[in-house]
Amino acid sequence: MIQKEIVLLNKLGLHIRPAAQFTKIAAKYKADVYLIRDGMRVNAKSIMGVMMLAAGQGTKLALECIGEDEEQLCNELMALIENKFHEE
Amino acid sequence: MQTLQVGAFFQDMQQRLSLRLLNSPKGLVRDVTQKDLHRPGLALAGFLDLFTYDRIQVLGNTEVGYLKSLSPEAQLESLQRFFQFQIPCIIVSNSNDVPPDLPRLADLAGVSIFVSPLSTTELGHLLSDYLDHKFAPSTVVHGSLVDVYGTGLLFTGRSGIGKSEVSLDLVERGHRLVSDDVVTLTRTADNVLMGSGSELLKHFMEIRGVGIIDICRMFGVRAIRLQKRVETEVELVDWSGEHDYERTGMEDAYQEYLGVQIPYVRLPIYPGKNVTVIAETIALNLHLKVYGWHPTKQFSAALSEAMKNRTQQIESYLEKDFE
Image 1: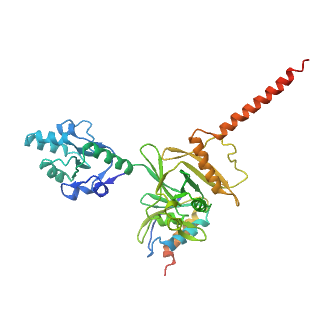
Image 2: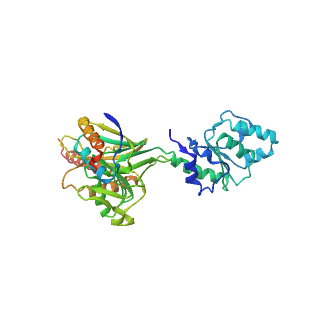
Image 3: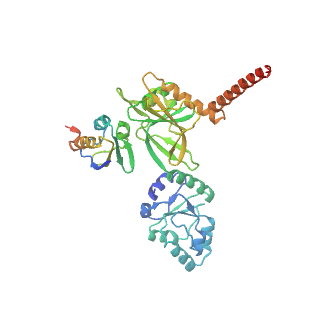
């Protein structure tokens, strides 16, 4: 299991488009992915779950990847967050 | 440990209990950590063993009457002793007038003191109800909860297996959606598992290939529910020849959430299978079981009877064939 602390730096936070980008990547992999905010743990393959966190800019979250391809998955998601979801 | 800030409690219950804050708001940042209440009559009288000071303290007619009966010095001493403890907050019932030292010392100790016009009993009931709910253990599961013929079916399974599609199909057939994708489960005081949606997601749903849809707008208010007791979990799984699936219903399987067991059905799916009709069947079958009719057991009894009759027929036939 990989666990990472993340801070959302992009302007929109996990709004609809970023959440969709996030879940699309998550869904490609076999590993389970969870996002945790203040003890609320949601399946990050579910767009509704991710959006329910209502995580705006600056929000601190924990990312959890569990499964055989967890490492690639975690790297790809971290890259997306670091690249601020390719926002203009 | 779950905590509830006194300020949040005040905001939630101010109207229902007609609460009025008697002192400065600085005690509102304290946390309530216990769901029980305490009447501190004996503690005020000086018996401090077993004083459950960490509960909300309710001062009824007895406590206020006792304090008023004391001389000013004895009253001060009693209250000072009382406020040595870390009390979350104090509520006075029956709109009782309290001795002026009480709010003053409460202020010094940083404890909020409220007054309510309700009787102690009524206050106790309403408070317990609220605190039970607030302190009920809860968890979030990835699944969809639908009320099917009055039975709460929780659909779980891997992402993309079709939980939302099954829920949509059920709604289309007149059943009611509680929540899609994210369900909050809460264990109530009487060990019932309640499921509800989130304030934000309401009855929005994601259908792959279409996007986000609004069930309430689309199907009207009768297609939705705010909460429902979760009565059976239906896990949708990819069909695989290697797995054994329940064929007879002789064995009842259960799943546990927050220490509450609910019936569990593992449902293999493949293209062309009508999961909706099977979901309705699961719901109706559960109804029959609740009403005392267990189809597998009834069939099993009928089968045994038929076998016995067959044996008797053969026996009676052989009886006529004397050797």
